[in-house]
Length: 177
Image (cartoon, rainbow, N blue to C red; front, top):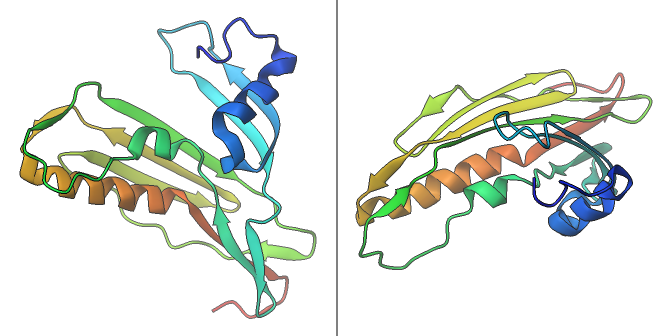
């Protein structure tokens, strides 16, 4: 909120491009809702183009669409031998929605979604509908033993991997396996 509050709307794109860097390619539009109402969740809708996200492979376009926010909330620094408990003091829930548009004459192959799951660290649920992927992540409050830190890091990395949306785009009429 601090990056955008009090900043003229026409400057939101430049401000968020600096915050996110190249993770989103070229940011084209930012729509911030509930920016001043801190009792409600901040809603950000970003429109961006990632020209290099998809590569041609055997007549298809294959690649990953970036999820720029996941590292902000899910990165866990590697510690070789953690000796102290670690804690999540601020439970956090966030929802990611990625919508894309295939080029004319092409379609996106549906992604296989995973079942919702929940553990001591994170809850995760995802859905896919046409050209829209949505996921809900809930980071749980808790104090954990040092020996659980590697599990926490692995779980965070696995959720980030799911959020970096793998996309396969095929020409209309191409064989769908």
